[in-house]
Length: 428
Image 1 (cartoon, rainbow, N blue to C red):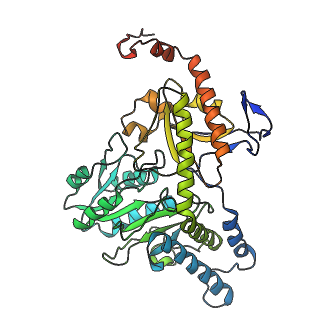
Image 2: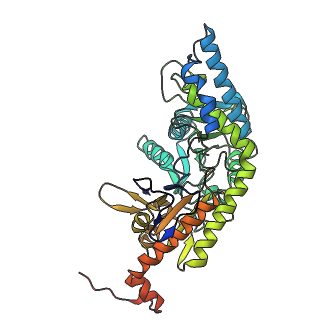
């Protein structure tokens, strides 16, 4: 994902590109909360003692320093478990969601290799899942990549038809990181359990934002991370079901048999405390926060739609994360738009590679053409955003889009009623 933000903190009293900055709004504005979130001060407060005073190793069982650290870790396990409807013993700590995804997918694939070698995922998964599956293909596993419909959802019939007697794992995310679409996880889990197949989900964007219950959704393994829910970076967890069925996972990092033999390594106690506190706060405030974020998202969407033509939302709004809005601004180049709103941190629907600017594979999977995919922006609203920021960002985007379209011959031709599909362009 390509992101843009200003390099110098502009004064809030200044007016950028003719758009007045409302009182109380400080530039730059952060609206990229799917990439990462600012740590909640309450999370930092909970973590602080574990850097200096209570600094023991949670695996040191011979003295009070270790016992205190272990007690803090177990409290965090309980806080995380409560948020997703699990038990403390089903929570394994990792360095983050990428490791959790690798541990779940590779660990299950290795452990159940004698039962089969087929894995099912979807085309719009995060790279942490797709690249892990591609790695397994090199080791002889077969992977099916399900397509998604234009609304971003998989077709349950496609999943039913893809499952064979060799299928050991289905890995499909709850909510997409780019378009915010929430998959029918309950149906997926039910189908997997009926067919005797394990179900892993990347829950990173969903946990703490919308209700997630691993039992009601029949999830066997779930990845989550702290830094998407106002906790610290570098710490995550993997839920691994212990009953009906008991899921076994092969350790991917060896050395000491920590975390019930699934993940060795000295535990990051301050980070784990932060993850636990972030989960506790999310559980307490999720309902009210979701309402507030949904209202802000809809406010932003309405403002943009009422002032601009040839724009549309990517992904269904019927099953959607509260703070996500991914919009295409047709006849505008996404990177130009990002540069025009460089006092706002958002993401474009393009991924910068070393040689070329490739359109987002998620947007391409929805059936969007390169030109539309390139014109897409992801707004990620979060806990610390305000209505005043939403109003400023909407006004700024509208102003920049209008100015860029004034320079666009394609937009001018469309406004004049010319059908661009019928034009024969001269080759150079």
